[in-house]
Length: 372
Image (cartoon, rainbow, N blue to C red; front, top):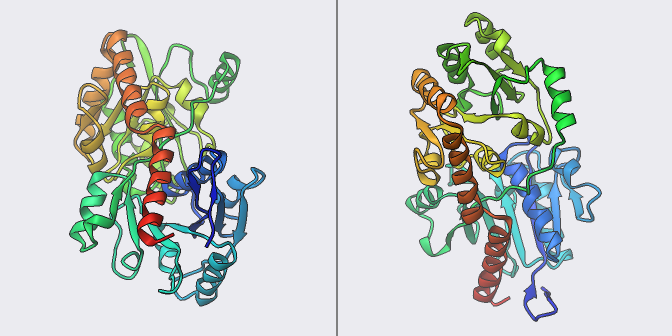
């Protein structure tokens, strides 16, 4: 096992980052962001993922070594042995896994001096998937508490949040083009929502909330733009028609990146029934958007109701509609203040520099304790 050094003398520990998903959810996107950020700060990183996956495509052509491994299922012994071989071949000091499949297939023999860190962004099943790691990172305090309650040693459980990229510049001409493309009048209020079209994300509640809202607020029409794909797509579009709201909803499909729609929007709505953190909230704050969201675990931990966002109960379409109505009819200074407070909270607690520094410091600490 080897390490190199920064010019100032701080050690750099080669790390492998393993993710077996074929999806492109929050964990996948954060893996991409962290791996790229570590690489850009000079860390020696190798990404292990599935060939053709969204993560593999997103990391292509940026100078990061990628190795594709099947990671097909929990019985994929070939992938397990391949990961062990790669750890030895790359002389990796840190092996960081994301989600259950990659973590379950990463099994370090006692003689191997690398440290296995499992990063969790949800309340996942621990036994059979995560317990064998050497250390665990939860991206919220609630997840860390859950890990300790599950019997993992508190001294090896660490809280490090997520970060989002710097906001992208979107020209007025490009915004105008999007408005023409999706039939959005210049004077319309634009509510924006983003997430996989699945039951736990609560888009059915958001559609019902839209139906509770008047067609105009403060003399301006109210529209909803949803950037997403998923198994509930057809049923949600049918629900919009049933509610008589199809003309007020713009189905954008999957948008990567979605930055232009954050710029176009007047407010962001997160209707999730369950949400440990909510990267989309960080992204909305990144663009200074006022946010309406449900009282999920992540919201109660990271949001001050009435200052950084407006909260409503999960599954409460009328309560959500009421908060949206308050937002749209409030003075412009109040809406702008909500967005600015969220942006300040993001910069204080979820900046790229702070999160990357926390990871590097943890790597240093674990290697020192491990005798690296």
